[in-house]
Length: 527
Image 1 (cartoon, rainbow, N blue to C red):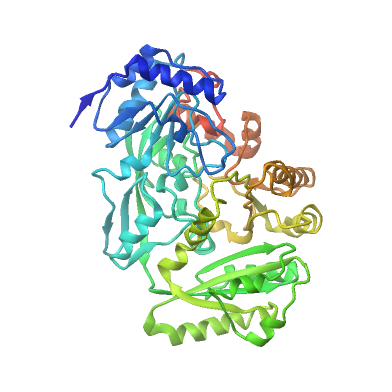
Image 2 (cartoon, rainbow, N blue to C red):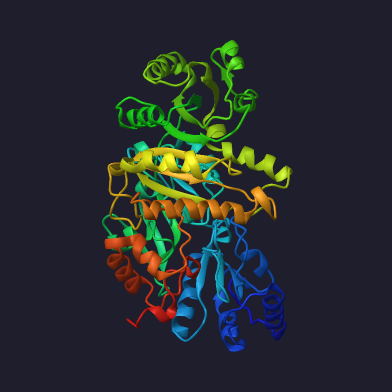
């Protein structure tokens, strides 16, 4: 049922108090502007007393208070709000940011003095997850739906998306606005390469359906587009038959060259594992003891005698999908693949889990960290894409010199195939057939010292400086850039296309201000 809501002067006073108490400097919309929004006839509603929540994210390092939070009950709510902001013109300070589950790292889903759209409200509305079987199975899902909920629904039909992120408690629109990468990307590409259709609200407030064939320029712009061209309100995702079980394997290497050669062999082989990732272990003793609660060693005696001695070790993590009646075939295939690898023989660990348990594995760790008060802390993450030609030079400097100790979080390192990434999207990747995703996923629970944000940022800066000064050719993923000049360097030759698309679909630079790519003043009027 539609109804008009006019914010009172009390709401405006609350907003001003929040801004003062929060120590945030920004342009504050005047009462007439806020009242103009409140006069919109919506299925959902605006709220003016939960700005603090909308100004927080997983990175926990940046807090920009919005003027209002939109709780949409329909796509038309989002379209009407963006259209009203667009019609207010370039002199209005209002901007709009879509917020999924709040897992941005440096305020990318925030809008200082603007409007934050709570996308999960849309997912909870009448628009449901719809699974379609047939020769080309797919699922239609709201942009604010969590991937874990998509998985639960598709598994009821014996189906699942082909490409994932490591953590499933993220929204569909959020990951598709970046790329969405996990250990299946070597085979299926990132999540943005597995989308058939999108519904998007542009920066003009238009609702546009787009695909590879229909409105294709907007389709490719929005995929990996960092929210700059529109808000993804619905997506059609390709599906495949889902296995029941997963053989989950971990092995260790002490030699980086052997580790990377084996990874590259696996991601280019015709018959290989279904998921391939790697991570780096720096100065961590007892690593195998940490695995014993859930992973079985192939040779318990040898495993018990293994000593890491503070060495830098490299873990290769792999899975093979199977159904219960295929266990014998799976064992043979896994054995044949492992026989080609050159890992430390005493470090083969494995376990069999359900497909759901494996895909939702990070959430299990999250629950443990939350119980210890270690989840809602700053996360100064650094995610890099490194060309194959420079990965060894990178490793010698970073793992041999810069990082003398574990940096309070996992360090991911695994290769992917460029041909699986659609180069028509907005995602920027290195220009080599094989490149590595390297993620330094630090947590900073301490105010000072080794576990502080400053310590982690110093290490991050040293790594980035080394890359820039030594021709590593890296690209940042989930980049934290704060100036347009940095973004121009990031996009390189693709900047002209990116800027043209911005002019076309968000000419007033209303959308996703937290990415710090464009401001309203930086774009000429092109209505």
